[in-house]
Image (cartoon, rainbow over all chains, first blue to last red; front, side):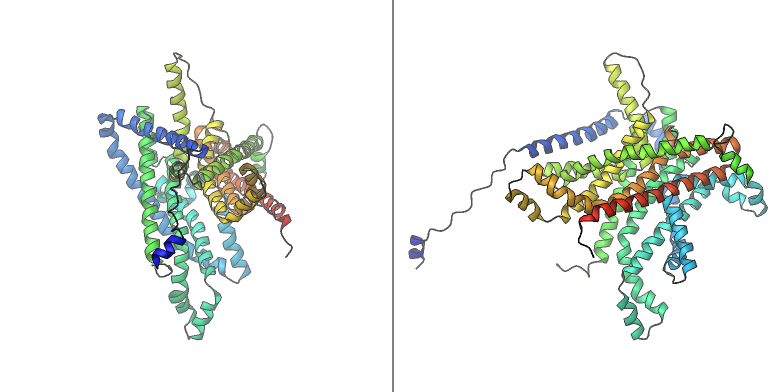
Amino acid sequence: MTAIVNEHIQPALPPPPVRRRWSGTRTTGWIALAAMIGLLGGLSLYLILAWDSELVAKYAPKYWKGLQITLGLVATSLVFGAAMSLPVAVGRLSPNRAVGALAYGYVYLFRGTPLLAQVFLVYYGAGEFRPELQSVGLWAFFRDPWNCAVFAFALNTAAYQAEILRGAIQSVAKGQWEAAEALGLTRLQAFRKIILPQALIVALRPYGNEIILMLKGSAIVAIITVLDLMGETRRAYSRSFDFQTYLWAAVVYLLMVETIRNIWERLEKRLTRHLRRDG
Amino acid sequence: MDEILALLSLSDTGWGDEIASGVGVTISLALATLPLGLLIGFFVALAKQSEEPTLRLAGNIYTTVFRGLPELLTLFLVYFGAQIGIRQLLLAMGSETTIEINSFLAGMVALGLVFSSFSSEVFLSAFRAIPRGQYEGGHAIGLSRFQTMRLIILPQLIRIALPGLSNLWMILLKDTALVSVIGLSDIIRQTGIAARVTKEAFLFFGVACLLYLALAILSSIAIGAINHWAARGDAPR
């Protein structure tokens, strides 16, 4: 039977292998990649060739200290910001017009102005109110640029985090509230057990972005003389006039951002595994 | 109150005129960076959605680097790096002259790099929102690839990308504050000088914040108008 069939109907030949032609796009691609690798490779080669053990021995411990200050600053600001974002988000969701407007004003103010201007306003502005601050015993706090930076950063990230939280809570369907009420849960129980877990999954990605934004934004504290990673870098450059000081800082920042991004991606994958349809 | 008005007046004793020139610098820097960032971002997005793996890889490396670096560090890398690079080049050619890099140009390039790496992501997701059939349709009616891109894809792409790009514009406007560090006389630098001279830091940095807010509000009005213009062909609801 098969023989007859094969005789009359030739079995289809396998498709000819597709030959990838050498096209203009391909040339552009190789040129672009070569340029990219040339630039990054050149910079890496420069870092290797310009390796100066004296310079490294002198500044590596300082960079390490600076890195710790950067991480401490970012973590502190994020935690305080998260705490302060709660009332702001509640205000944004409040049916009360005045409360809503107040919260909106706060968010607009801090999201509409540069972080640098806010830090300057706190740091230099506090110096102007020294007698008043001294009389209430707050001068010791505002005298330290690190504290001023945390203060400004926390207020700033609170505005951003409040918007993340508000958006996430509003993204949960209204029926979830109604179903919880139908089951006899109080509003607080409904919020804690039904709304918040769903909202936080929506908020996961923007929260990750906010952490990275804060980490990158924290570099500006170097301008108000905090010796974070950027501050140590600037100091090292102004003493050694060696450009590799900046390149090393770039390497460290890139590694940090990529690490956080990867951790966050895995976390998100793990936490949303019940929502995926495949596998 | 009168004292404050005197400090902010446009006269020789007031700081209003200096600050106004700072506003001009901030706006012109942001406006000069925008086309640069959009253009590079568009081509990087084209590379990232290409079928050619080398192009995709190059585009992804570009985005990863400039999205991950702090904006301030990018600015320093461009500013000092260009200075050192040009000096080395001149030395190699046997010239001893040192060249000061224009801080406006350095700011424009650094902010353009950052803006383009973010805008390429916006363009990329807009590209993905356009169905394949649009390209095939263009091909079927005999348009060249360039014509398909210009007449069919681009008008749709811009509409999809508009909200993301307006966000990036707001971020760019705020990021211009960083160039005050390399000596460009923008809002922050001018108000900073005024604050140091008059010892009225709170007032002047407060004014700086309000000016940025005003620019943000003006931008939202302009963006609203652009959105309205872009949606003029949509079916009425």
